[in-house]
Image (tube, rainbow, N blue to C red; front, top):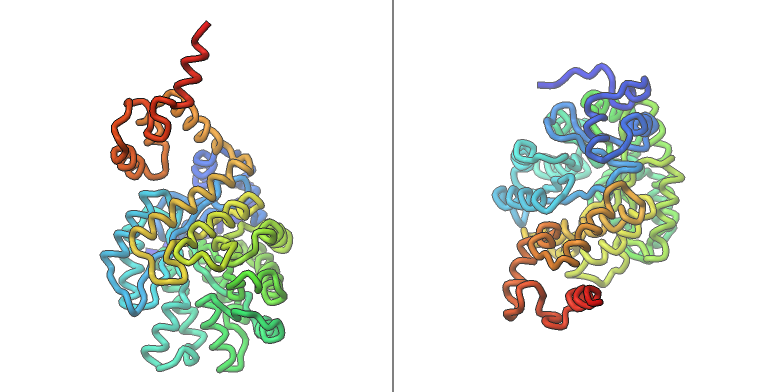
Length: 433
């Protein structure tokens, strides 16, 4: 049953109305609700919760904890609803703030609807995936997808309660011409971006998400749906980073952000994927300037192209620097990035790596409460309190197992130092007069 919305969150905040939802997020984050409400009104922060989805509201933006998203979903080559739901359980267990369904094969609607029923966290989707899969199956070609096919898919996701959708609105015909001129090593690596490029070239038409942006805003208003303005032209390797194609799309996204906020629609901006370490901070600051402080959602960024099998580490390095420089939302990367669909262990490793990056960035940004967790861990270590350390860790089961696997030691110390434990040695020495 659709809820009737007289005003969106931005409109209520602009009127000075501090809602219970804002108060709840402010209490969770330890921030002032009046400031949070002003930030929502100005498009600096979003609360991502569809009017049709009964979950705890997710705040993303200025002064809040850096949030992380985990992707799951099927392909034509690998379809298991049970496995995807197990991935959901794992990513929630290890601390993901949101989950995106990127399914392109199998019963896509059934997977999404099951995910919506089971998920206790915000859910995002990329509706063009369903639209092109349907067009390929029913019409024989992605290029035969109609404008209505695409918008009907978006509205279907919104009506079912999806909290945020990736829509590649900034990838225009002008961007394609710039892409041709730039001579990238990897032209387009965004799947949604690739679909739109194919559609635009074969139909000799403008991107429908750009051309009919007002139609999209009207849908978003209806459900207070957060639009994640996708980076269809994001760089797919280090040498393509921060080129004219990427900047052209970002400038368009900045203008679309202004139109959305003026119309009372919440937006976040998606950012680059592969960026050299020395360009990460600059990319974050450039986005914040061009998009007037809108929440920034980044994939990684990955700081090297040769980390296959360890891309979660490359992404965590870039994510920590990126979030410390202003990114608000990190999309996890798993060890199987660039190889295959992630399995359950990959999902766990990806979430933990992304959590480390987000937390390290929050300490650097001075987010309220972040450093206190580390201080508590230090106190537990000084006390040689292993149960306390395990409880504070990101993967308690791993710590328990590794401690049990070590050779027998005095219960208070670990097998690294044994009787020569620095903490214990100094503690005993300081007690002596």
